[in-house]
Length: 220
Image (cartoon, rainbow, N blue to C red; front, top):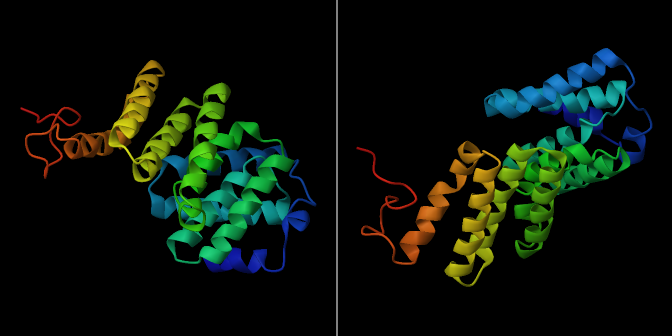
């Protein structure tokens, strides 16, 4: 599927891809289904679904789902070590999202790009503000799950960029409180190991070499 996708994209820029907009209701429903399923299914299966989103965008026209498809495709290329094309198609995703005025996809697209591609192709400090903005846009759009994912990504980047652990811990505490307000504790669980690691490094753990403590209490 990845080779098929690469062949279909060969020689095509954003203008060519955007020259046809999908208007078939059945195909639009399929695109929505592919995107939603790719998020919640195992990664190895999600890759295939995302490749299909990109392929259908080329053959049947772009939709609001196309930006997410290109973002995920970019992340796959990044994982495979093809950083040049990963960066190229990440920019395609942002351009398509803007042209399609797909604000409802803002948070999903950014959560994919800034968890993979842009962390390897951009300066880490430059990723902080866009991820935080995506988090806020996600809350505005009602996409609290992906807004929380962006919050977790932001905390992870801040931990690696901040000079003081106390400031990183404060950011994490504030966003954790917000996640609870929106009932996204399960998603916030992704940040729990990071929270405990910070506590360990700050000397707030009996066994600093183990991820056990206030953030990850030992179960009876």
